[in-house]
Figure 1 (cartoon, rainbow, N blue to C red):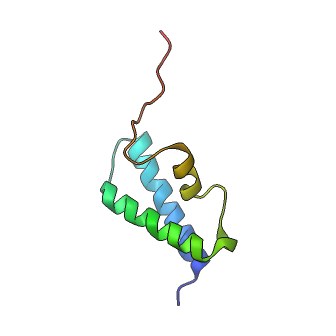
Figure 2 (cartoon, helix red, strand yellow):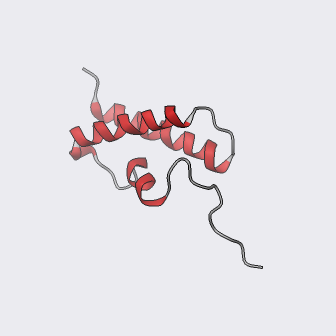
Length: 79
């Protein structure tokens, strides 16, 4: 059986990398569906192992601040 803590950290790192590619660099490497599948895997593991939950997990950040399909620049610049 795989180590859940290791698997969770691997998924968190991968999701953060893809978020940076998508939101910061505008260079997606995976589809929205693939990203969503990774997020579901992480949510499932965190639900099964609540002792491994972390406030900086992409599941917490993603739910609170943005969705994958949201606008990249939602803040208007002052004139």
